[in-house]
Length: 170
Figure 1 (spheres, helix red, strand yellow):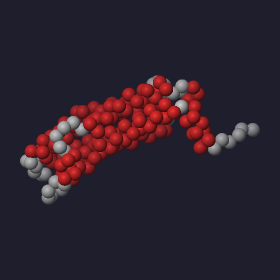
Figure 2 (spheres, one colour):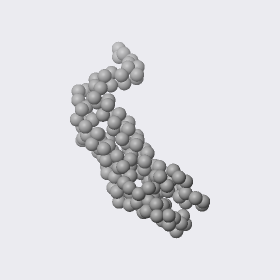
Figure 3 (tube, helix red, strand yellow):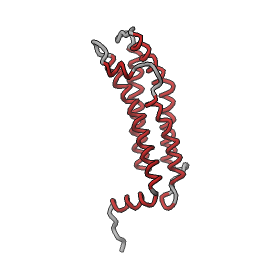
Figure 4 (tube, rainbow, N blue to C red):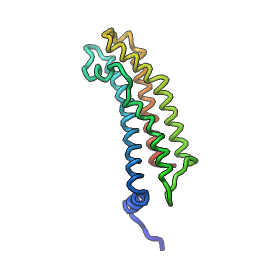
């Protein structure tokens, strides 16, 4: 007769079998994804705020100050840490780069990285120049705002789908 093992006991057993180093890298992988895609989400929200009439809020001015959006680009660490996790996953719960969920996650990440580099961050740089230069006209710069907002929204959808794939491991 099979014995029923509670889910919490199973999760603890899996965690213990992987080791503390694996858990630290997993936490770093998750935090890097949250920070990177969180910054992408903030870019979109602030692009929408730029469309409102009136003076630009100070937080939006600070966000769109000239320079590289390093918080957003931290997403480039996501696959690196993911491959480290694959290498560390040994034993009964070994994962492989040939697993379908890993391939799907990598494809989603590549799509997000390309959209960021080719669409989001160039448009964001344009907004930075306009906001910092004081030549802001919300209606005249609608194209850049919408480009950042819509790309950000698309990337957030990719992030949610990737998160589901990584957790569910279908």
